[in-house]
Amino acid sequence: MVQSTGPKKIKCAVFISGTGSNLKSLIQFSKKKNSLISIELIISDNPKAKGLNLGKIPKISKKVFNYQERKIAEKKIISEVKNKKIKLICLAGFMRILSKNFIKSFKGKILNIHPSLLPKYKGLNTHERAISNNEKYSGCTVHFVSSKLDSGKIILQKKVKISKRDTAKSLAKKILNQEHKLYPKAIRKVFSL
Ligand code: GRF
Image 1: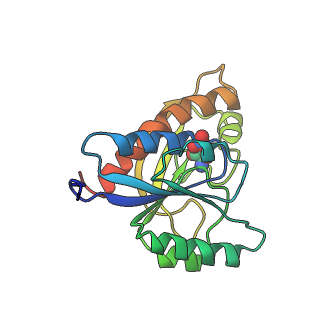
Image 2: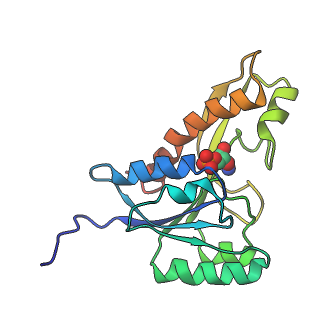
């Protein structure tokens, strides 16, 4: 029997290195009625990434790649992503820098979420830096990935107020809650739905 699969969904791969709370929100988004994405693949550079346990749905395949040699890892990832006909790559706490060659292979199809209001605070320890600079606001950004770190075209941002009592940890938590809403919204915007 041939089952109807409904309207065609955008095949998506999510790259993670750790907890995977953004992956979780993307999985929930993909399961919504009439959702526009289907998550086909989870890729991690870290075999211990907690997020790998989230994709316990038979349809989502999970692959861990050893990043000792980036060139080899990326070659394998490219063939995996192409095999699965992935049309969108969502970086979600993936702690590796993709090579120019990798980015070129999927031009305009790689998104990233970053925990600051870019262009401010690119790179790591964003919350510590925002607090020690007495910023009144921080937030999160979803952007296209370009060859320069955290510098591709911005898709959406969400501002979060920093209170006097905030620590890097409490601010991270507040921002992460917003990230979970922002990533699906940004995907919708990219595909203008
Ligand atoms: C998020 O803050 C994301 O913006 C940053 O790494 C963190 C990943 O969190 N790039 P999680 O693994 O999705 O919980």
